[in-house]
Image 1 (cartoon, rainbow, N blue to C red):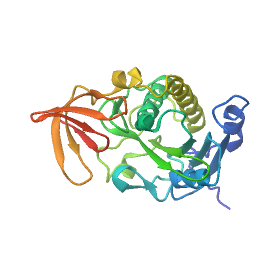
Image 2: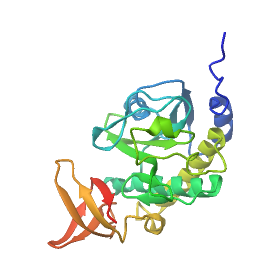
Image 3: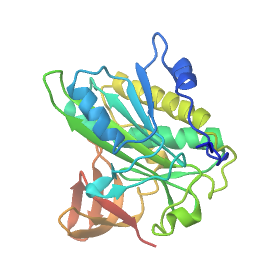
Image 4: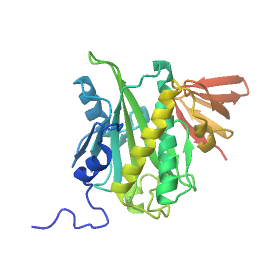
Length: 270
């Protein structure tokens, strides 16, 4: 019988090795689940949260068939070409500060990718990791659920690792670590680096009560740029992004005055 891993540049993740490296006493991570296929890792984590799962659960999918991005866009990843995972968080910070969760996830992604694979990357508010050429490497989606076990947040990450040009033919603004020239494409070591970076960033954010992280502004290509914000209802607003407030919302200076946005797709204007 032919091996399902004949494509040797895309080996499977090792669940046992990930657990051994990450699930330890005092660690931020309570459980690592690696599944061959799922519809949405965020949906899986939200369901686990409603069932009483502890914070620190991570669900990783080798392929995702019904992934969701912002504004309910669907997203499908070729098998073993990406890191597609969701983390279960139960933040102690005030709920009004939870808008920072996708932003601090972006900071952790940028730090890990820069240090682990040798790429210079930038962030785009609120949820994208960009290569040096401006194409998208990763996206983040945070979703909340409330239940009898308490409020929880699933933070999902989709990072293109070995995705090829032919697999991104319908997404001209997308790229992957391989296409961007990364020196490391090993998903096991990269996932460990990402989760450790996130744990450090998240812990620092919680210790300061959910206050803004200056690292986000330092890494964000949106701040200071002229942008167009596409809102869920179809409205667009153009202006200069001047910063992010204490709740993670984008501040935009327009001809009509300052606007504040908690959601929307941002287009960087040249």
